[in-house]
Every structure is written in C-alpha cells, then in structure tokens.
Length: 175
Ligand code: ZN
Image 1 (cartoon, rainbow, N blue to C red):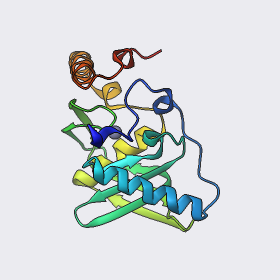
Image 2: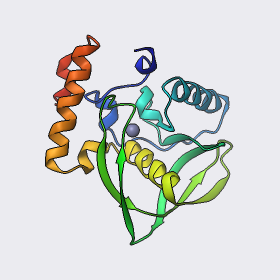
Image 3: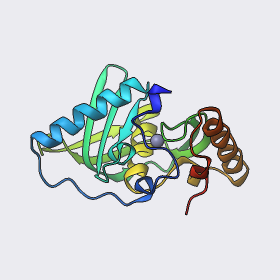
Image 4: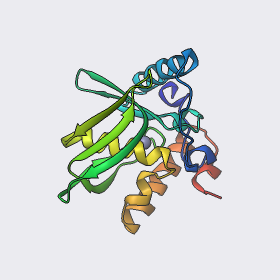
C-alpha cells in the first residue's frame, strides 16, 4: 500500500485538470522535481506527471533504462503516422492495464529544469511513456484511450483494488 500513498488515484479532480505551464525555474521547482523522482521510484514507476501528486503543473519526470528525463512544459511537435499497440498501466490506476494504440515516434519540445529549451526525439517504450505522461498534464487518462470493453473491465479492476485496500470506493465514479 505504501507505494500508492503519495500518488493521487483516479477519481481525484486534479487528474482531470488541464495543467498550467511552469513559469518560474527556481529552487522550489527543483525540489518538486526531486520529490517526484522519489515518489515515482517508491511506486516502481517509469514516469510521473505533477498532477499525479496534486500539483496541476505541466511537469513530467521519467526514469527509462539508465536515464532520467525532466520535461517542463513538454509539447508534442511531431509524431509518426505509424502506430503501435501496447499494454499500459498507470500509478493512478493501480491494478489496471489497458491496450492503447499510439504513434510509434514523437518529437517533443520542452524546457529542462533550468529553463533551457530542448528537443527530445523518442521511439519505442520511451515514446510511449512520454505520450502517457503528456496525456496526464492534459487531464487525459488511460481509460479514455481504451475501447469500451477494456474501459469497463479497468474500472471494475480498479474498484476491486479500492475495496481490497480499504479505500473510498466512490473514487471510481467520476463527477
Ligand atoms: Zn499514468
């Protein structure tokens, strides 16, 4: 249970907000980034968006292979026509995974933690993680990209997870 202690779960309104751009690159931002990496690692995640810990900001951290990525105000500026389907989970949806089709490759413009503009070209699993996290800062969740049957199954599994962990079952009902 501890793994999910600090991560906001599906049903919490902050996960549905369109997050605001980061405008100030200061020590506070750096400490938020450190906190995000810590929480992501504790939860054994590969990516985390700031809204998932209650901050409606356009900020994403990723741990992929041996690299750490900090994407501030990321924006997809190009994507491949070619798509791939892959099973995705989400720290805000423990116990759930759904198949999602996404562009195989994306090009993302972003700021680093010091405010420097940069471009990331990603393919394979990294491309998928980046797109999943950018969805989060736009208030989009994996169930929104699943087909109807998988969406219902996912909500059912999530509901079981809540019951099993004595969490508020009304979380599965979005208002
Ligand atoms: Zn997620």
